Each structure stands twice: as C-alpha cells, then as structure tokens.
Length: 177
Image (cartoon, rainbow, N blue to C red):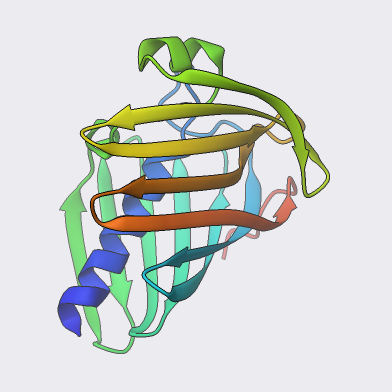
C-alpha cells in the first residue's frame, strides 16, 4: 500500500513538471488553480494543482491510499511531499527535466520530435494537440489556447493507459494560505 502511495506521489510530481511552459522561465509565470481527474489501472484520482506564478506549485491528490500534498519550490529545486494517512513527509531535490518531454507549444513539440495533432475544442477550450513517443510510451496532450494549460491527455505504453482531464480552472491569484 505504501508503495502505491509513493508511486502516486511521484506521478503527481512528474505531472507538475510536465505542465511547465516551454519558455526560458522554468515554472508557470501565471497564477492558476486547476482541478484534474485522472484514470489509470481502473482507479480514478482527483488532483488539484495551484500555482502562485512565482515558482511555487502545490499539488493535492486524493487517492485510494489517502491524500497526498506535494509542494514544489522551483527556484530552490526542492519538493516536499506530505502523505496524510501515513503521517509522513519527504523532502527531495527536484529536477524538472527528469519528467521527460513537456510539450506545450509548437516550439517544444519540435524539440521533442512531436507530431502536431491540429486544433479542436475540448470541454469548451480551444486546444492544440501533440503526440509524443518516448521509449515505447505514446502521449497525446491537448493544451488550451485560452489558458495555456493542459486540458486533456492520454498516455499508452507497456504499463497500460492513463488519461487526465481538466475539470475546473481559475486564473485568480490563489490565497497565500
């Protein structure tokens, strides 16, 4: 059970890293509060991601094993993970490049040899999509042109299929608390 929780924590951290813009800035430069629903291996997880736009991102995941909170401090390259049910806290170095390709736009798509999927509207958001294949795993990501954030993704590979869909989004500055 602890192993599943640790894997869930690492997936949340890696997802946070893949939501980075492809600009010279290493973190999202605009504040936002987004809620996602992801499905993998028959389990559904709800994840809330909050960014202050100044290099600090909080990700809260509700998993069958309990709630996990990860706080990434991009400027200082450190991440804290709090696992409530286990009363555990971990502090680890953070390397945003370890997550693999973060395709966000045409420039980053070229960098990772991604295939453009064109444009379509997903859940009311005009999006552009890219398909990226790395080591036998194929990801299709759709980025909202209106919010510059992930709206939908599906990943298929040797370990199965997973998907993530944006459920709510706000560009308001989050509460400092």
